[in-house]
Image 1 (cartoon, helix red, strand yellow):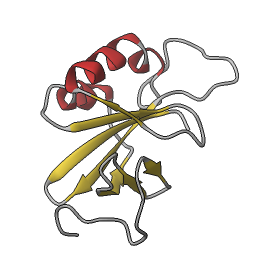
Image 2 (cartoon, rainbow, N blue to C red):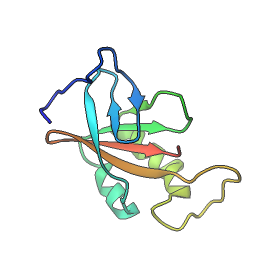
Image 3 (spheres, rainbow, N blue to C red):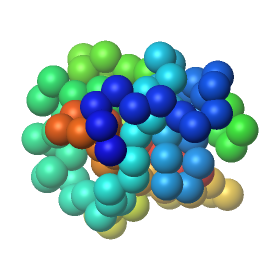
Length: 114
């Protein structure tokens, strides 16, 4: 996939499917993995990557700066993370997971409960 690849259909923005994600600029990202341990997330949130969170089915991803991603991880996602033993039980809700997407050499980190 070439860097900056756009979706096959014009107009894809802020869209998430099972194996693809389109950012706010329409750039298409390809799924890599959701097998990410908490220690790896701690490293990723210190890097200059693209970050987003998705907590509601049907809603678009929310784009986060690195600082916002660090705060989100520390205050919310790490407390109930599927990649480790959850420390907080969220009745009737799924735990957070982290997925990695790629576009060329660029990486995107998705915090997701859906």
